[in-house]
Amino acid sequence: MTIRVVLADDNLLVREGVARLIDAVDELELAAACGDFDSLLAAVEETKPDVVLTDIRMPPTGTDEGIRAAGVIRERYPAVGVVVLSQYADAEYALALFRQGSAGLAYLLKERVGDVDHLLRAIREVVKGGSVVDPKVVEGLVAARSRAESSPLAHLTPREGEILGEMAQGKNNAAIAADLTLSERAVEKHINSIFSKLHLSEEPDTHRRVKAVLLFLGEQGG
Image 1 (cartoon, helix red, strand yellow):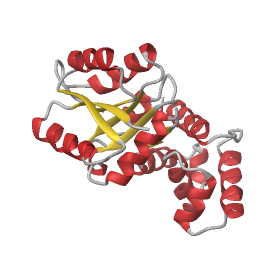
Image 2 (tube, rainbow, N blue to C red):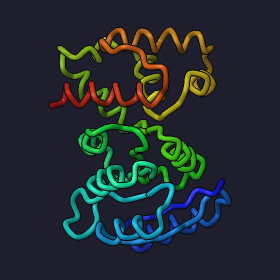
Image 3 (cartoon, rainbow, N blue to C red):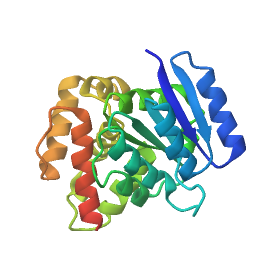
């Protein structure tokens, strides 16, 4: 299956660089490339892609166009996944992206773009309706919330914090076990402990668990 991509970034060099990466992957097809909010929405309407890769800050205001575009796209075209690329590991941007739900959404730092496997994994995940959060953003979320003495995150062990980050990338238990060289049983035990400490019920699928964690963190940060 070929995944059709609309790319949006106001930096011409970045846009051309990412376009070349997309062209080099047989599984991907570049449907359109644009540099601002309005042209992004027009391109999505015209080409009906499978996924959108968009920068956060673009004309006309250079503030949060990518976040706003993701909301519009998910509302108008629920089958279209959106990967937001940002140079900011600011948790507030990620929380804003996922505020209305996490299905079909990903938040990645631009430094990941050079890692084709990482980018492709995120694209595949959102096309399936899953969600992905850059591990550095998760680390920031956990660290910020852990500084509050009243936060249950303060009670997570280092290993549990690491597994929380893996979960937020959309990985299932088997993938987490492989990456961290643990047994699946050990991973399951850690995840049960995480949700117990965060007062969250365990969900059967990974992207719902990501959504639950993000919603929890967002509420605590509000």
